[in-house]
Image 1 (cartoon, rainbow, N blue to C red):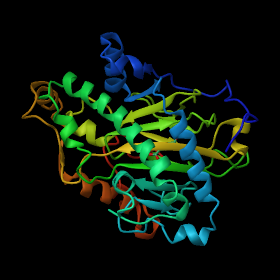
Image 2: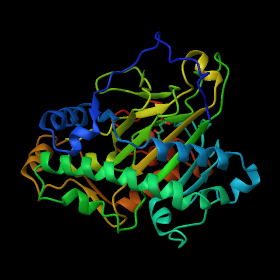
Image 3: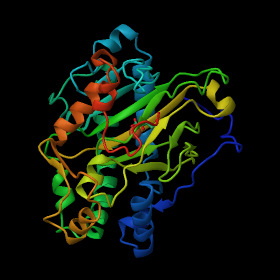
Image 4: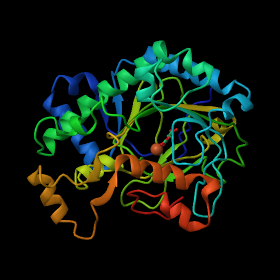
Length: 357
Ligand SMILES: O=C(O)CCC(=O)C(=O)O
Ligand SMILES: [Fe+2]
């Protein structure tokens, strides 16, 4: 894992500031802090989270990721996610397009389903490499539980702010229902500084699910970029040690009638000389239960009904369950399914500038 010898994040690149939200405060209902979270969620949909107390879980997850990527490629490939629209498993570098032209990604990752982690040794969706299995109970399940805890605290705050009946969002993300929720450990290869900006390593996208809980705790390298609303240039999110970066995905943006923002982002090589180092990142994605239909909850909240009425040009009825939405997006990112630029278009979600790469 990257150690203390990493070069610092440079000061001469464009960054976008995010609000820092104190998890300890929102958890106990601090009104001012909750209002700051709401401001972040309804403007850019990204924020830093501190005091989430997940250092141990995060460290262990990075170890799991490193152990998995150290397996021979042939072994990892036995667990590759495949082209059918399933996310769980290993994704090799170059399996996905990063843009409409079909340029390839260069990140590899290991995704573990929340359902498989919590049910282990029972197999719900699929099996995993030995490095995952040996850490399923002592590393992955604790990280999933931590991610879910943060998720429910956040969802319940949004639920109230959106004027929804108590427990609505929590029910749509019921832990008991199988879902696309998963952990992801990502490795981006080092690159030459002059090569670094040629292609994104992970193409421009909005997240598919509801919330992403990402940690840079043991990774000081940049690379995540956002295209803030109203901007036409990408900005880096500066990694802050000990702070997670959280963001809203398409599902929550749809449930809330566009009040919560699912913002477009991508991953590029780390800035400056950081590019010469391997980049690791770790994510927990919360996605709605498989059977839940992605649409604005207009019947349950006046606030949402009003918001939808005020955006007549936008479609908040996807006619798609969370499972279908998720499978479609994964499937059409896979380069093996590409027929032309229309395949990239078929992988898109709520991105407002779908041509950005
Ligand atoms: O590695 C990162 O910083 C972000 C990854 C990401 O956006 C994703 O996996 O959806
Ligand atoms: Fe993402």
